[in-house]
Length: 256
Ligand SMILES: Nc1ncnc2c1ncn2[C@@H]1O[C@H](COP(=O)(O)OP(=O)(O)OP(=O)(O)O)[C@@H](O)[C@H]1O
Ligand SMILES: [Mg+2]
Image (cartoon, rainbow, N blue to C red; front, side):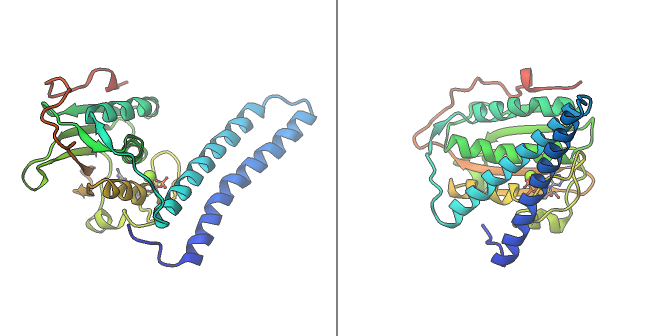
């Protein structure tokens, strides 16, 4: 992963990123105190909700910064075991389903036949996949579709399993296909709110590379984006425990 070019610039940027949700929390709490002193209950729920959302944002940001520090210091430990790739995909999709429902975006899971197990760290793979699906949810307009697919790699990816997250959003320019994996690079604003930092993709790519895979983006601007990564098959795994189905829509498909 590419190191941030200038450490003091990075520190200043992060301080700013941490300060804005903290300032919002402080303002909300101050206003709540005033409302409570006047016995005014009307706006309190709204202020509490804003404080909570900013606290969650702060929490996620701190997790990302800590993960990054561990990677840079070479202290990020991976616990790779043989895991069913479809299970990771399903679990991630299910956890993001409420967000997809709220944004009226269809979430579909597709799996190739007889998938082999992957040798990976479940927590970090889930985190990488969550970052990709969250981005797709953030940048795809309402009514769009996201497909998460997992299949056996072919040709130069043989021996690997390929995970893909494709969406019907605005896509990426040729430059963005490369640059979005750099630290703090942010292009277009999300459909919902502009609360990103530009850490999600560099962290996701670092995790996957540490696990022996690769991550990249493909896009025709205006035609959606595809983010893909590979992970190695578990050693000695012949065939998978997954059913021989080619498309799993079931409970991970939402189309309000
Ligand atoms: N599915 C997508 N469609 C279009 N643009 C995308 C997509 N995913 C990422 N991008 C672009 O790549 C940029 C970097 O993504 P990244 O996940 O690193 O940061 P972020 O989502 O802005 O913030 P963070 O992940 O730190 O909350 C985004 O700001 C956006 O411009
Ligand atoms: Mg992101």
